[in-house]
Image (cartoon, rainbow, N blue to C red; front, side):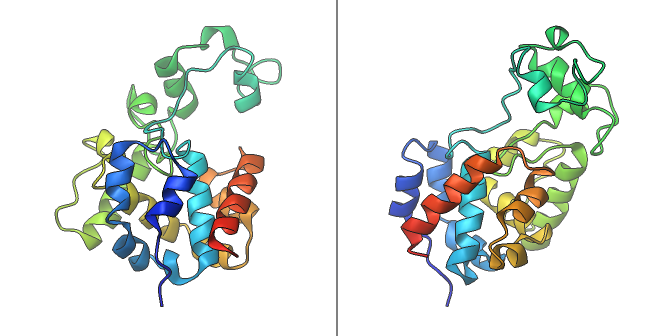
Length: 214
């Protein structure tokens, strides 16, 4: 029997959640059931831990790329000096320029401005033109009225589509079996492509597990 997602539990985890997230959560159960996330408490715990981290406890709609010069080499060490070729001062506090530099020419971003246009959005920080195209393809397999997220990227964090996209992405990346094994580093690798924020993700997981009595 599927595990019920408790709205009071979400309120404990994310007391300052955006209204669009609260609205989406009210219709979350069938979406989570469809993607197998509620088959066990452990799956639900890992899913919630990841989206809480990625979305700043349901307060962030899109990626914050307003980095200071000292922070840039920490986030992208291979791109920015002293290890990389780029001068951090030239990209500091300039989200559009930074996104076009670090995301341009990859993840399906082939046109000028794609890096910023398809920066991270939503509960799982969907990033790159290819990911927006894939989200459209997957969601239209379940919902004939799913919009074209490539054409209108901001719909990725809308009340109607933020959770369905995150749940579909979770399943398509094979996260359920990894959650069954309680492998947070492997789950994080699938979601993030690395281990950025792993300590915070572990903290979220411990907190959710306690609330779910795992």
